[in-house]
Length: 283
Image 1 (cartoon, helix red, strand yellow):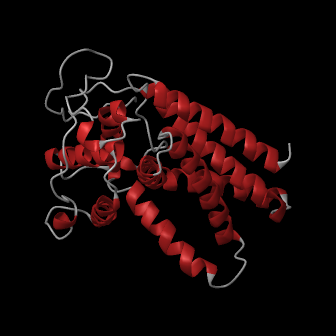
Image 2 (spheres, helix red, strand yellow):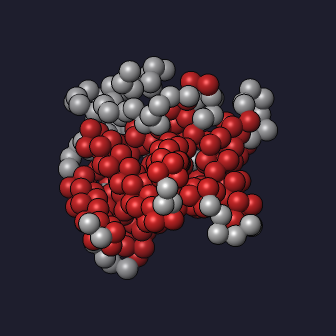
């Protein structure tokens, strides 16, 4: 199949899947989990397909496939977070221009596109087109590596195991202040965790005041306050909880008029309860 056709089909499936998630109430965690993996692995596979002709030998192509899987594992969570940021900016632009609001189609298309670029960039480390390319790419992948493996408990095969959420969904809330940057110099953090704090702190400051985006930001702020020292796997779960909390705001056009009542617990009608410490992940 020609790569351009494969890219078009992948983009179409991802966008349609995202539109279905947008319109689903409540947010279907299993479908979102599957969509993120389909979009990310599909993007990595497409990036490998574009790089394939540059690696003619069997051993070279084996190295390319191993590199693709490693690049996917290292970049999954950073790309997930950044794609959510892109979706919040798109939401803000759509509202400002009076356009229909799409969150998860943009989110998932961003995941796919950035994984394509990340995989191609990773192959440039194997065969640099210019001597200066590794000077740029090595620091970028190093940051992604530190973010993805911030504690020893993150040394797992999969970057995301949250197939279902057992914890109550936090209530929607207003953002108060950037909780991350003040902790960068606080005691008790490993160096990779400080890298996450810097990245999260800078992202916090650039999330626009759109209903879905600002609520995701605010809920993440509250979850961080509850558990300021955590693993990357914990932060993945927190992002899912924030997406669930903000899901009812997709399509709301006026932040002042959007509902702010607590969201129901995932999979139940029980009201939200204080956050449990145990991570809701499959074995």
